[in-house]
Image (cartoon, rainbow, N blue to C red):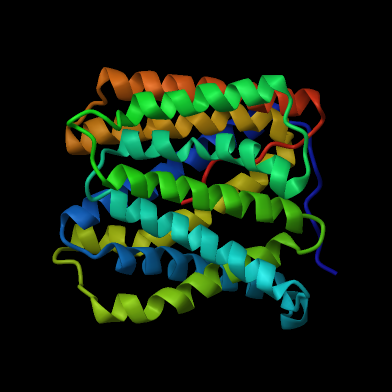
Length: 303
């Protein structure tokens, strides 16, 4: 039997690791935006993100001595749909990054917890009270403020980001339904394997190699960033409960705003900032109510 690391109450360490997790995740979006700007196809980058992740998962499984029998699962259809939803969220986000700023895409993706709350009633049978329903309404107002659908600056790629957030919300709900039924290792394995197989033909059909050493390094690191972020995330939850860590997922928006400024010389306008503030506030209200009700909130969108 493999030894499992014990839970420890080191909340400061857990919070620091959570901040590190989303710093790593922000490197995925920043690298992808740089590479699509260099002409690499989004589907190829999505393949590299999942294939690289899959390779590192396999290496960890070999190191831990995980047997193939542990990957045999009954709800194969549910695990497959879960992986495809995560893949869809990634593809839609990567395509949107060709046209939208990092800050705007991250703001839109953070509408996912609001969508999860909205869908938890019909899909999970959970009651959505007045506080959380009000937060849902306010959150959608924040989305409208950020994307300004009736303004001349509105870009159609915004709809892709919204669809990506919807995919992640459904993915998160399915993850909640599979909790306690399928191990984390098994879910990680299929979340890497299924998108890698599904995206391989599309990646090969339009394959382009990076044209310089820096782009090639980022190209390879996309999958590593995905794997590393998830590994740190798991360790963070060893040191602090989810109800303590969840508010720090919003550091992702701050990281991407900094990358957007430092790398692409772009700062968000006042509407994006206002929308991000409203969406974050609504998400935190939902988190607070779920904490009061004793539920474990789901984390920020994975990329």
